[in-house]
Length: 382
Image 1 (tube, helix red, strand yellow):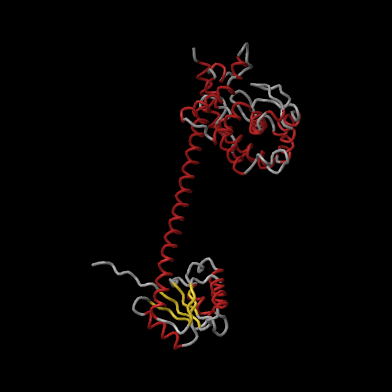
Image 2 (image 1 turned 60 degrees about the horizontal axis):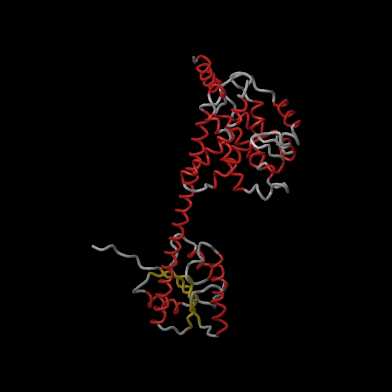
């Protein structure tokens, strides 16, 4: 047995019983009907849970006129898509123009012709079904695009986290260093986003990309030998020069990953800049290229402040962390030499945020024990 298809519901709005009876008689074979004898009642029905599929609306009624009812229906997102057909004795062209101008789908003058009323209703309901289908399709497509966008973002996050974790397994620092520096960079960027020097660059999208890219700043350490990477004391001979190559190794690793994909990946652009340039200094005394001032990418300048601050305050298996106040003083001393002066000013203005981030992602004793065990394995190796 074929399922029954519910008849469309028509709301008839008229203050004259004879007009209501006539319209209901015309509609009874093909449609279900609801009745309202004034505008207020019509709006209440239209805003109910079981909304009508179409409304036949008189113009001249006590209280709210049909024009007022139509205006209210079209102003409400919950009812604006319900087709309205005026059925009225007002037959002047200006009357029809007014009704259609308020958003009505059609305009029928009394006395009515039953075939014309049914034909007009059928046309409007067919158009409504098409409109509803397209609206649902658009909603589906928007939802699907949003879902796919979330998937792409998740893949990016996983890729970055996996690459950063690889570096962390070989470094003497903990995974919390990666988290802290990411949040430091974001806090600095948020503080500077309205600064004239940085406003055009530090958009909401770019700040999010900086936050996601920051964990890859030391990815190049994967290529540094353990005897240098895990050495607790001072570097000797050419060890420091080898250590410096982690910036180039990091950038080249990301470029190699892009080459495998066959495209340049937007979300890795800042990762390359940060990995390669975060050891540059404002006065040109850094590495690997000795860039100075604004020649250093903004992303790398942000990371420089974040990375140095965290290196100073953090515990290592071979040292205790420096007090916050002393670390702040060192950053301040580097204003205009090591660091972009405006970034140091921003850092000084949000010290409480840096302290909060440091506490939130503080290294635990377990973190340090794990790194200490790795260092002991290295020192005991033949």
